[in-house]
Length: 136
Image 1 (cartoon, rainbow, N blue to C red):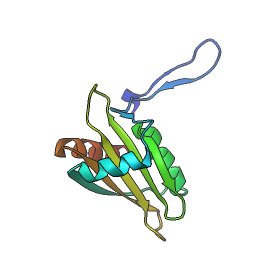
Image 2: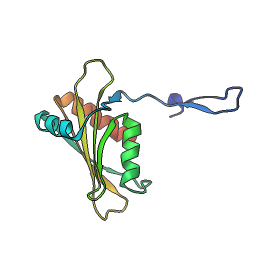
Image 3: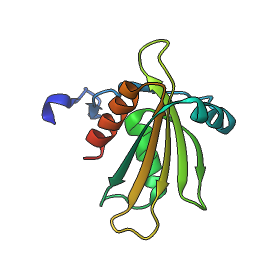
Image 4: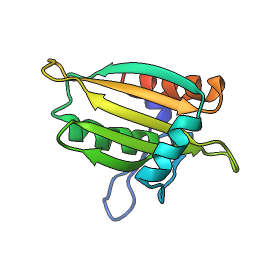
């Protein structure tokens, strides 16, 4: 972990921490309708269950997912504790990656089920592995 953490203290006594960049970038202008249209056309799917004892609630997890992956949060549905996200690999002209998340009710620690969709198995696998590393 320390190999990937770089700290310096500038003359203003502020602490600057540079963490490793996500290999993904957000699709910021993605709408819920666009998410739905793309969801049905993407053929590769991978499912994960993420348990995190430090997670206070679903909204905390959704914010963590958004910031750790650098994905855009498209919509959060509070009543059902679901959220959808859109992103893509950082390479130019790369494919769309979508995530649907839903917290299981009454689990302690909280468990969130994720469905990842992309057009290729390689992309869903890469994203699933990255998520597992981030929430290990």
